[in-house]
Amino acid sequence: MIKIVCVGKIKEKFYRDAIEEYKKRLQKYTKLEINEINDVEDKNKKIILEKEKEKIEKHIDLKDYVISLDIEGKEMDSLTFSKKLEVISFRFPHITFVVGGSYGLHKSIKDRADLSLSFSLFTFPHQLFRVILLEQIYRAYKIQKNETYHK
Image (cartoon, rainbow, N blue to C red; front, side, top):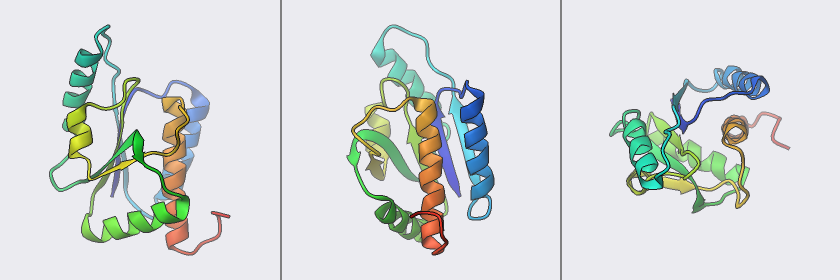
Protein backbone atom coordinates (compact mmCIF):
# COMPACT_ATOMS: atom_id res chain seq x y z
CA MET A 1 0.00 0.00 0.00
CA ILE A 2 1.16 3.49 -0.84
CA LYS A 3 0.08 6.36 1.37
CA ILE A 4 0.75 10.01 0.55
CA VAL A 5 0.48 12.55 3.35
CA CYS A 6 0.62 16.10 2.04
CA VAL A 7 0.07 19.60 3.28
CA GLY A 8 -2.41 21.64 1.29
CA LYS A 9 -5.51 21.04 -0.78
CA ILE A 10 -5.63 20.73 -4.55
CA LYS A 11 -7.49 23.77 -5.85
CA GLU A 12 -7.26 23.65 -9.63
CA LYS A 13 -9.47 21.19 -11.48
CA PHE A 14 -6.75 20.19 -13.97
CA TYR A 15 -4.48 19.06 -11.10
CA ARG A 16 -7.36 17.15 -9.49
CA ASP A 17 -8.09 15.50 -12.85
CA ALA A 18 -4.44 14.48 -13.28
CA ILE A 19 -4.32 13.08 -9.75
CA GLU A 20 -7.51 11.11 -10.33
CA GLU A 21 -6.05 9.69 -13.55
CA TYR A 22 -2.93 8.42 -11.79
CA LYS A 23 -4.98 7.07 -8.88
CA LYS A 24 -7.03 5.11 -11.42
CA ARG A 25 -3.89 3.80 -13.16
CA LEU A 26 -2.26 2.79 -9.88
CA GLN A 27 -5.26 0.63 -8.82
CA LYS A 28 -3.82 -2.14 -10.98
CA TYR A 29 -0.64 -2.25 -8.87
CA THR A 30 -1.32 -1.10 -5.32
CA LYS A 31 -3.79 0.36 -2.91
CA LEU A 32 -3.35 4.13 -2.71
CA GLU A 33 -4.41 6.50 0.04
CA ILE A 34 -3.95 10.27 -0.09
CA ASN A 35 -4.29 12.28 3.12
CA GLU A 36 -4.47 16.03 2.66
CA ILE A 37 -3.69 18.24 5.62
CA ASN A 38 -5.01 21.77 5.74
CA ASP A 39 -2.47 24.58 5.46
CA VAL A 40 -1.69 26.24 8.78
CA GLU A 41 -2.24 29.99 8.87
CA ASP A 42 0.32 31.82 10.98
CA LYS A 43 3.14 34.31 10.50
CA ASN A 44 5.58 32.28 12.58
CA LYS A 45 7.41 29.57 10.61
CA LYS A 46 8.15 27.51 13.74
CA ILE A 47 4.49 27.45 14.75
CA ILE A 48 3.44 26.45 11.23
CA LEU A 49 5.96 23.59 11.08
CA GLU A 50 4.99 22.40 14.57
CA LYS A 51 1.26 22.35 13.79
CA GLU A 52 1.83 20.65 10.43
CA LYS A 53 4.04 18.08 12.16
CA GLU A 54 1.27 17.22 14.62
CA LYS A 55 -1.22 16.71 11.78
CA ILE A 56 1.22 14.68 9.68
CA GLU A 57 2.14 12.38 12.57
CA LYS A 58 -1.50 11.31 12.89
CA HIS A 59 -1.18 9.64 9.47
CA ILE A 60 2.11 7.81 10.07
CA ASP A 61 2.04 4.38 11.68
CA LEU A 62 5.04 2.83 13.42
CA LYS A 63 5.13 0.03 10.83
CA ASP A 64 5.25 2.44 7.86
CA TYR A 65 8.35 2.90 5.77
CA VAL A 66 8.42 6.69 5.56
CA ILE A 67 9.84 8.61 2.61
CA SER A 68 10.09 12.34 3.13
CA LEU A 69 10.19 14.56 0.08
CA ASP A 70 12.88 17.10 0.75
CA ILE A 71 15.04 19.24 -1.51
CA GLU A 72 18.04 18.10 0.56
CA GLY A 73 17.17 14.42 0.06
CA LYS A 74 18.77 11.83 -2.16
CA GLU A 75 18.21 12.17 -5.89
CA MET A 76 17.69 9.13 -8.07
CA ASP A 77 16.56 8.37 -11.58
CA SER A 78 13.31 6.56 -12.35
CA LEU A 79 14.94 3.13 -12.70
CA THR A 80 16.70 3.42 -9.34
CA PHE A 81 13.51 4.72 -7.71
CA SER A 82 11.58 1.77 -9.13
CA LYS A 83 14.11 -0.74 -7.79
CA LYS A 84 14.16 1.01 -4.41
CA LEU A 85 10.35 0.86 -4.13
CA GLU A 86 10.39 -2.80 -5.08
CA VAL A 87 12.97 -3.65 -2.39
CA ILE A 88 11.14 -1.60 0.25
CA SER A 89 7.78 -3.18 -0.56
CA PHE A 90 9.17 -6.68 0.10
CA ARG A 91 9.89 -5.73 3.72
CA PHE A 92 7.24 -3.10 4.41
CA PRO A 93 3.58 -3.47 3.40
CA HIS A 94 2.97 0.27 3.90
CA ILE A 95 5.09 2.95 2.25
CA THR A 96 4.22 6.49 3.28
CA PHE A 97 5.40 9.51 1.31
CA VAL A 98 5.31 12.83 3.18
CA VAL A 99 5.11 16.13 1.29
CA GLY A 100 5.45 19.24 3.43
CA GLY A 101 4.04 22.70 3.01
CA SER A 102 5.66 25.98 2.00
CA TYR A 103 8.32 25.71 4.70
CA GLY A 104 9.08 22.04 4.11
CA LEU A 105 8.94 19.51 6.93
CA HIS A 106 9.55 19.73 10.66
CA LYS A 107 12.90 18.26 11.74
CA SER A 108 11.23 15.43 13.67
CA ILE A 109 9.39 14.29 10.53
CA LYS A 110 12.66 14.35 8.60
CA ASP A 111 14.33 12.40 11.41
CA ARG A 112 11.50 9.83 11.41
CA ALA A 113 11.87 9.24 7.67
CA ASP A 114 13.56 6.05 6.57
CA LEU A 115 14.51 7.75 3.31
CA SER A 116 14.72 11.41 2.35
CA LEU A 117 14.11 11.86 -1.36
CA SER A 118 14.56 14.85 -3.65
CA PHE A 119 13.05 14.95 -7.11
CA SER A 120 15.03 18.01 -8.14
CA LEU A 121 16.76 21.15 -6.95
CA PHE A 122 13.98 23.03 -8.73
CA THR A 123 11.10 24.35 -6.68
CA PHE A 124 7.74 23.01 -7.86
CA PRO A 125 4.27 24.19 -6.91
CA HIS A 126 2.98 21.72 -4.30
CA GLN A 127 -0.07 20.87 -6.40
CA LEU A 128 2.05 20.07 -9.45
CA PHE A 129 4.52 18.13 -7.37
CA ARG A 130 1.79 15.81 -6.16
CA VAL A 131 1.03 14.94 -9.79
CA ILE A 132 4.76 14.39 -10.46
CA LEU A 133 5.04 12.12 -7.41
CA LEU A 134 2.07 10.00 -8.50
CA GLU A 135 3.43 9.80 -12.03
CA GLN A 136 6.81 8.58 -10.77
CA ILE A 137 5.18 5.98 -8.53
CA TYR A 138 3.12 4.77 -11.50
CA ARG A 139 6.24 4.73 -13.69
CA ALA A 140 8.05 2.71 -11.01
CA TYR A 141 5.37 0.01 -11.09
CA LYS A 142 5.41 -0.08 -14.88
CA ILE A 143 9.19 -0.57 -14.81
CA GLN A 144 8.91 -3.30 -12.17
CA LYS A 145 6.39 -5.18 -14.32
CA ASN A 146 8.51 -4.63 -17.45
CA GLU A 147 5.55 -2.93 -19.12
CA THR A 148 5.98 -0.28 -21.78
CA TYR A 149 5.52 3.32 -20.71
CA HIS A 150 8.69 4.60 -19.13
CA LYS A 151 10.77 5.26 -22.27
